Image (cartoon, rainbow, N blue to C red):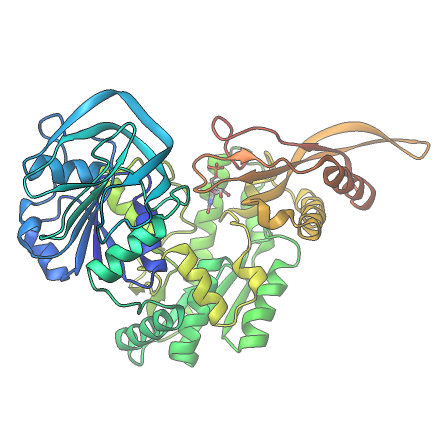
Amino acid sequence: KILILDFGSQYTQLIGRRVRELGVYCEIWAYDNDIETIRSFKPKGIILSGGPSTVTEQHTPRPAAEIFDMGIPILGICYGLQCIAAMLGGDVSSSDKREYGHAEVNVCGSNPLIVETSQNVWMSHGDKVTALPPGFAVIAESANAPLCAIADESRNFYGVQFHPEVTHSEFGEQILSRFAHKICGCGKNWSASNIIQDCIESARAQVGTDHVILGLSGGVDSSVVAALLHEAIGEQLTCIFVDNGLLRKNEGDQVMETFAENMGVKVIRVDAEQRFLDELAGESDPEAKRKIIGRVFVEIFEEESKKIDDAKWLAQGTIYPDVIESAASKTGKAQVIKSHHNVGGLPEGMELKLLEPLRELFKDEVRRIGLELGLPAKMIHRHPFPGPGLGVRILGEVKKQYADVLREADAIFMDELYASGWYEKTSQAFAVFLPVKSVGVVGDNRSYDYVVALRAVETIDFMTATWAHIPYDILARISNRIINEVRGISRVTYDISGKPPATIEWE
Ligand code: XMP
């Protein structure tokens, strides 16, 4: 396994994903872990990530110096390279020419890391290495950074100024593969079926004969936990599915069909629509609505779980990015933008032990094992859906009539996106209900009905997003269908706002 020390780069998680895609288990830790902790992980190699700092100032982030005495290979990427250079006796200086974007890199001589003589890579740096540390040689150069990649092959220390982890870097995958497989000697043993086997064994070992409850939402993470634990502990698992009346069209039935009917998972469906609507009545503030929905969910979940006598564990669909993000928010290493986004949250005061079988997995690994466990591809590749559901897609006060209209409009939008191949091209798409009335003509009659807005975005990380440029003829068909087929809607608009400044959701 490989240890990645994080210096706060926006790409650190990508390094982790790439290494795992190569079949090598790795973990991402904060750069300032002490040497004993690092040694106890027994890594076969270490990768130092990029980061926003500059080594040219005093008191900037450095890893424990003893990592260079561990006798294992080390690869520094961008800031990581500069750390290696600065710590081992080379020189780094700030340059006024920032290099950002594509660059051509040429290999000098032969080395085990970079083989392709010329390649197009992704750069993002201001500082650069200006003098080699003793023992190092230049292995690749670019126009802007003559010391673009360096190596001390006798000690297996490597550094690259560019970012092999981003897909814009032509042979990035090969570089990471050579580092992980050849230089560190890691085998390819991190595959979907191995991951499942691992998760199953450790879940069994953890819970023994105890009973486990799980809040099933129908989202990817909780669905995969349900399928996994069903394999691992079968009858010892009970899922609680709270239907809050703010789900998409047929969603509740689909969840029951997939899990209860097809897989034989024990699922308690709680029909709580009226209770949520009653609690939401009269409230139009978005944050207040979120709080109400979160609170009522926890109340219902607690009531239901008390009915399950011998439950000792609460399973949750926490995944690795959540773990990294919350660790980063504690140490302040990476910028944290999302805070309200964890659905439901752990009901406080519940005396249950926490079981998080996906805690070490990235989203794409979760998807892969979900498919391998037999969950429907459509469910696994579904766009994210916020915990408060349609509650934040009906602007202002939530009413059942609005939710029903919105469900129909949204279903038509999805239908057409699937049919045109645009569902996969967008990261998230949905309809929003606007409680304002607008005039239309239907046949010879004047209509005076509500408006829906369509939102479709493309994004990698949901922190920034661009609106999807869906072709006009597809938008036209969607709009026609919604106005003709959904009673209560007289006008459809398309949202052309980017994030920032607009958020993805309207509330
Ligand atoms: P925004 O609207 O902040 O959304 O640009 C970014 C991503 O987060 C989702 N989102 C939520 N998810 N509870 C959730 O579980 C929430 O309250 C919530 N608000 C936004 C949103 O759907 C998008 O994927």
